[in-house]
Length: 190
Image (cartoon, rainbow, N blue to C red; front, side, top):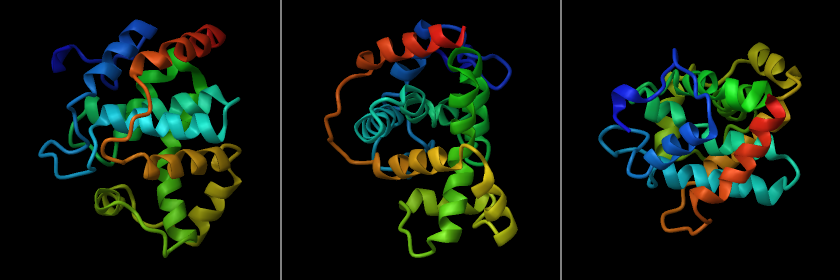
């Protein structure tokens, strides 16, 4: 898929086939244009994050899919670290629904929240670098507001899987394994 034909913030993903094509395009695409970021490409990171969520929350298909698609914004708008979550959330909302979209949007605030409430928590070098561009560590009032969000706990779970899903060479299946889950959630959203 050519970059110019990829859906962006103004053209949402409308079908499972289109989303699968995007997810496959993540192979060899990185969170930074110069590959100086995380040690795995967006494809492997998506699979690992979703796999971790499947293991820890086997009944929550929407949470798993949020893990699968949370970083699509890096593909859709390369170099936009601050806005990648919003870009991905807008792209998947029509197909995967409000909860998946909101979890994707919240994975960055969850990082900022965790940095506030767990200051000794280790971030990958790339996540530590982008934290500043994404608003930095939350202050007390912002952290309290985030904690009151009905999806805060799930967003934190997504964030923890996001942080853990960066292992070079880890075999967690193939992208096609996720097609039935995507179809199930997309059908439910209709």
